[in-house]
Amino acid sequence: MHKITLIPGDGIGPEVSNAVVQIMEHANVDIDWERMEAGAEVMQKHGTPVPDQVINSISRNRVALKGPITTPIGSGFASANVTLRKRLSLYANVRPVKNIPGIKTRFDNVDIVILRENSEDLYSGLEHVVIPGVVESLKIITEVACMRIGKFAFEIAREWHRNKVTAVHKANIMKMADGLFLECMRKCARDYPEIEYEELIVDNTCMQLVTRPERFDVMVMENLYGDIISDLCSGLVGGLGVTPSGNYGAGGTAMFEAVHGSAPDIAGKNLANPIAMILSAVLMLRHIHETEKADMIEKAVHAVLEEGKFLTRDLGGVATTTEITNAIIDKMD
Image (tube, rainbow, N blue to C red; front, side):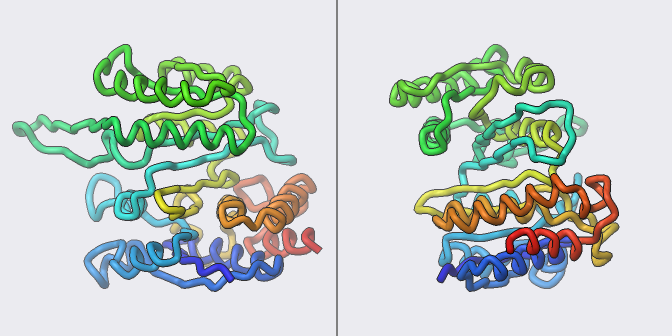
């Protein structure tokens, strides 16, 4: 039996999390869910959006599945997502982005894995007011973190039978910080001679992504670039509602999550799209070596989307969360 921490999250989080639980039960995946609460409501009770018991649960179980959590913009509490990644040392974010049957997009040959360094860069949160009206934010880049994400990227490329790794940077301007990142990527590349390696400036990368996304395979980058580019790539295949995400750390600890918003305006109305949460759970199943069950669920999701009969509103249909979940379950039989 797999003991897994489940964090339903805020807004539509409990609804899409419940969809995953139902599908896992129907697939006969032997999971004992340890439910933990995090987010805005928890902040009011405990003074923090991520209480220690949540961290302890994930540290103990080594695997977690998390629904969307609301993050205030410009004020309020710190991002629960960033807090979880930092406290659990989940240094690598993995976002597989691939065309899905039935989801019409501008491009047909997208199959990219985005690797984002999760622990530093401007997300270190080191900011201060120099003088009134002037704020300084510190970009932290270390050799340790760069080597770690570089090795992880090439290992993913090897394990997932990928052919090329692209390092994304802005070393033409940030010669020391991004220069260190590239130096580390080159060191890592030398240990994987069978994998093609290239470097691309981040602005050129964005242009290439919206003109020739098929040229990319595995992409590795610092935190801020990864935050932006991973969402851009999601848009190439239908949006955040259909793309999974996983965060990986040392010792096999991993947290999988839907990275779209908590959509409080439709919370509790049975209108939420559970696909991103389900596909993140599929990524989780592969991590815990339940490959056969992962393949079965992913195949069922693709069959429902390709059929187009049960699609939620964001996908151009009128189906409820319950209806699309039941349709996926039916396809598994």
